[in-house]
Image (cartoon, rainbow, N blue to C red; front, side, top):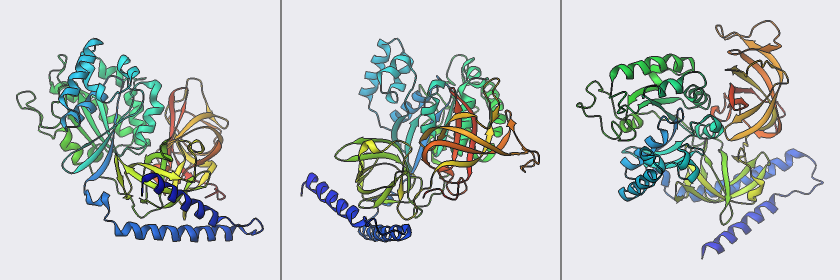
Length: 496
């Protein structure tokens, strides 16, 4: 049977399923409707699971764990160059391509940018030497499959960086050791600070801090310079909530020439470094635990048409199998999974942590927006227009007061939505972590406050205590991150 006929058959199946679940309007009690539908979907799921059980789990048979790595840091720290060098060293890019990029960069009088061209694929990024979109690429080491997310460093593109970091398991903070460049990135207004705070909020719990450009003539692999940078960054990482001993690792590299990346740096070049190289450090990172049997959650970051509707995203919880019946929330659209692709390969089944493209029937591409969530039928993700959250105010705009009526842009998993602070409920004492007695009307920088936040349209969120990845968020206004927070409570009537 050819592919088109197969898809047609599947669409007919799903159409029949959809018809079967319709209930006449006079069947008034909502519970009946829901239980019937759920029973039917569960049957579907059981059948699909039986099908899946017969097929050996491809994802497991690969035995390699999968990690998303986001490269963050100030503009020009060398994130794209380091990412490009990793791909070159792990054999993802051949010499001929590199030579082509070298020539291209030379023609633009930007000889040192050629490695970045591997990650920065569009013309605008190459001309300006600035990453705009989040670049994606895969590479493998002995034990792990990695997806690199190369986030933009420029402050105009922080929203794009947020969408990259919200899919990441570990962060690589790239810092330029070149005299003047580190200072610019780190001082007030530099992107290094904002990126670290965002990474922590967005759930990047492990951080590799790579001090790049150590081969620069202003540095020459100087231990003094390396130690100076480490001593300045450590207190800041602590204040952002990182446990520096457990979750952070520093190492020196040169992204442009590839020193201390795949193999340890030669003692002739850097006699004082006894630690691991970048690949070893990445390999030794502990993977966050995820639940393959939990309720299915995949925030949608992109969608397109390709023989049906295809959605992209990272599985935060649960597993997906060809033939599954799921819901696209918040519009509760029932869909059927026609095919699952992991990286470029078609698979029957995929677990949490994977970046997937999923082909669906039962929904049109224009009915999906990024921020929607592909969710299990039995326990769909809650959808709300209002929630209670605990916020930490980082840095308000000058002369701004944070009070009821304050408006900002909310970034939570792949949702970007305008929001308003409806009510400040209580201020938390940062020392004792207990609520203060006095009624709170406004707060200033550094305050921790519990408040009610309202958005204009339905969004999918979870309580932070249930699903950290879907319950943490940032508030931004006029291109600046002003607060980070977590969802503490949802209204009892949240339509799930």
